[in-house]
Image (cartoon, rainbow, N blue to C red; front, side):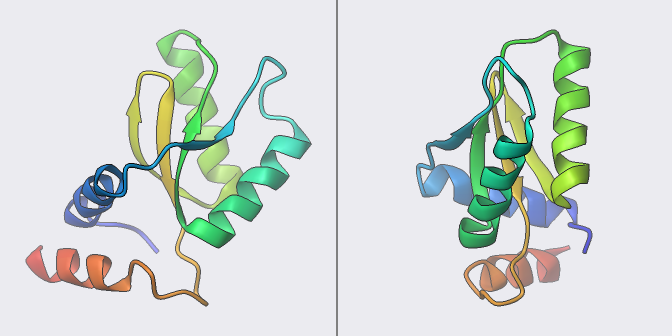
Length: 107
């Protein structure tokens, strides 16, 4: 499922509205297997999460963000400073269906 720019905008607004805090923090050892497992479980439960990534230069951070999204089959919604917002739709949940439908119809 690819997201339209309106859907990404709506999810970004929702992450701010919910006042999400980073629930997973990637430490000095980078994207380890345990971190991937934690991200997988958290995305399955919450769908929309914030993740704190380590301080790196722009190219390395972009590569890390891309790697996370590819491995988890998630969408990068926003990246500001050391915090990224990820979204992955859970087929068993309808938590964000209304937001996604409304944003899609606005497109």
